[in-house]
Length: 313
Image (cartoon, rainbow, N blue to C red; front, side, top):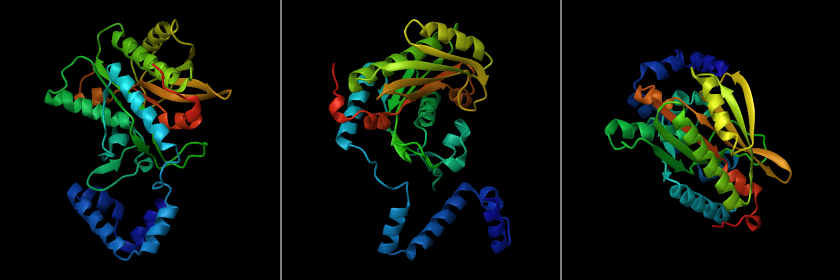
């Protein structure tokens, strides 16, 4: 990237990066980019377009049994709604900076777009913004708010793991509320997510949640106490593997967990979740609490063929 910038600087005779990123307003930059794209496509032919489509790994359809996947998706959302999670149909784009400002993910790993947007790469960021907006404008006044969504995410790093693709669907859950003392919110929300995910795996895919990997994370002043409280609370109900070594993590605060399933004799980390401080940042309130988690729904439908997974009540 540095070499490219040097070449551009030599061609243009000015510091383009500084000009475009700092000296132009958002609307000016947007207008410039729209004009650039408009000019670039004017010379394209149908043959050029087909070649571009063939070579671009982001634009190809997902290789999955669509009817099988959609039936599982609908059943999953229905079950979650019955457990008090409000289903959301999210936009395919979010505000520019959503992932890098809140989730501290490099903007280079996100597909940035024009008009102040980026392609959705983490639905839980957007759900945090949706909750915070509701708190701000008074439309979300309940002490506890729970959302779920199954959107398609797109991320730019190339994956080498079999079954991983540039765009994929994840079943995302979030629970928002405020500190009520003695980690009561944290224990209740954590248990709710895990119980919901365990039941979904069992009923929709006949797969057991084999174990929970509970990992201590820095970033919270009460990280150690929170970890201990959650570990003791979960042990009677789940098989818990504890990692008490505090680790740096710019994403999760205090505690992270992984949900492990077993398919064809192989352990797979299918679920990832934990506490984040995004709503504290957005609402400037240290009392805010926000638990997020994601289950690899599309990946799971590939792991468990249609003939072996039948929904049951």
